[in-house]
Image (cartoon, rainbow, N blue to C red; front, side):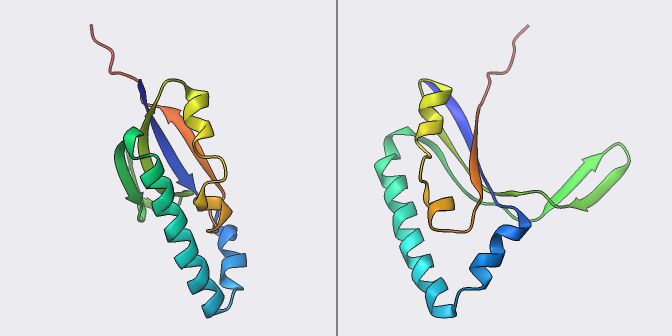
Length: 116
């Protein structure tokens, strides 16, 4: 089996609908979402390589120095699957975007390090 990195993404404007919910509605969605997320993790526990988690603020380091930057990455998980398509299908209707205000999940293969 191959390892795949799944990145949870959320655009800055994806929070607008969330922010328009009442506090009670948000709390209900949080409870529902965390239960669904936990269910997803439990259902797929046999293929989890790393449970991952939420991501914080970003710093970019390059030849000119260090700078604060913004990106759409909100979290990650590493799973294993036979194929890229199989890995991607695991995230259909994922709570990240079906309950929470996330936009999407992007899945990419973790390639082996080339050896000389």
